[in-house]
Length: 352
Length: 255
Image 1 (tube, rainbow over the protein chains, first blue to last red):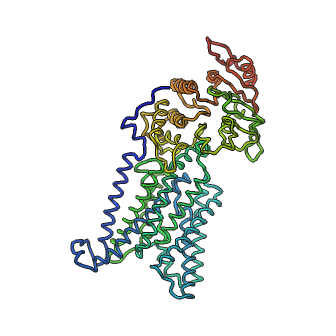
Image 2: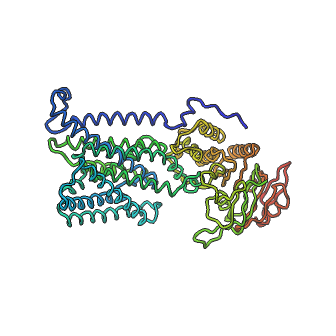
Image 3: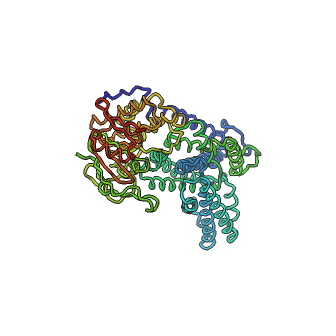
């Protein structure tokens, strides 16, 4: 046998994480922190005035109870959407796959609408059920959203007869999205009491995020991200082809199922807290891939952090543009994301 | 001594309408280089895939005395590496990441490389001369360079049995020679190599031949055996002229 080559420091860079990944992650984290600082400083009746904050208990309370959870929550929701977008693009090997185009967000919205209706029925029957800071209700809504999201993805894949055909998959996703959206509207018609809450939900809003939301999204994000990192290399192997992946011992259908579960959970958790926020899941993985092509496990991490940064900045922008009024952040991301998609469409090669 | 053998292997594709392999029983000798040859559509690639346990089959495949359908996928992947003819490629993957996928059967849940994994990746990249392009994306390579990356991916598994479908495709003559030398070196270390080659001339460098025709194993034996040569010629409708040049048999087209 030939003498095995010795590892030089340069060669050791084969190992992930590569230095460029560490740098990119560092840059995104620092930008996110700056964004959070900005987010805390922007709002009606208060500019950036951290100096007087210590002496002003009201300002401190606004920051602690409203702005900080809102900024952090926006980041976490964006991170969940970025992660689920990256998972969708990796498992479907389709750069246009995202929680919205697959119908999973509409499914999650239907789940939330259903739970809102159930809640309004329950609360009128049994009085106030807002206990423990509304945590049981949040969990219930997230659970219902998860079931809706998973059902919608499965329905889309079934209608498209598999994931291989891009156009069929996207068309099926659009059909499922429209039909489930219509079902949500029908629920609202039957139960008009829930209509107002549902309206702000449909627009996508970060306004009412509190610490409980942050806690829930944080836990789910850490869980989903860790599991997604475990799936990173098998996903890369799947990209060599199903046979090659199988020959490497990858349980192909189980990996795909795990990806669908994770992306449904991540989408549902974000949608249940913030409503429908479009394009973050599509744009974040795209931007990372364009900027720094890499293996899936590092790409998934960067896409998640990038998603958080995007939604945080969109949130700041939606509050700053027509201050002291604010735009629903979902409208903001739809406009920005739509623009990004149009710009991508001018470069057909990138949609591969 | 046979490391891999099949018994009555029958493979049907397309909802059982098209039988690709009929009752094939072949035995692959351990620590040698076996080449599967035959005309286009004889079922060479299908046989290789079936031996890798990647196809639903009737009949059985035995790997080191175990029925391969009873071996777990993870265990099989460590013992046997398979390289296909057309691997659909995610072109945004770096060369070192692709070669690293060969270590997948050896990695834990989290997927971090150990020192041993890194060593295997380095060795495989050096063997296929792709170590200088480790950070280049697959999409930026030529066909032959990509092929070498995929070969390195298969070598990185460090399996006892290597199944390779057309390993020399897209390679220029110097790299064909390098690839064959690497395979011969592996065989001399006791690794079993099975290749599919459409080029009879190159196939005669293997030690053992399996001749397929229309999904049936017509003949198997040493590549030095003139009986095997006769069968080979028959399968190719008598258009080959197989003759010795020095110690090596060569196949020339009969014009």
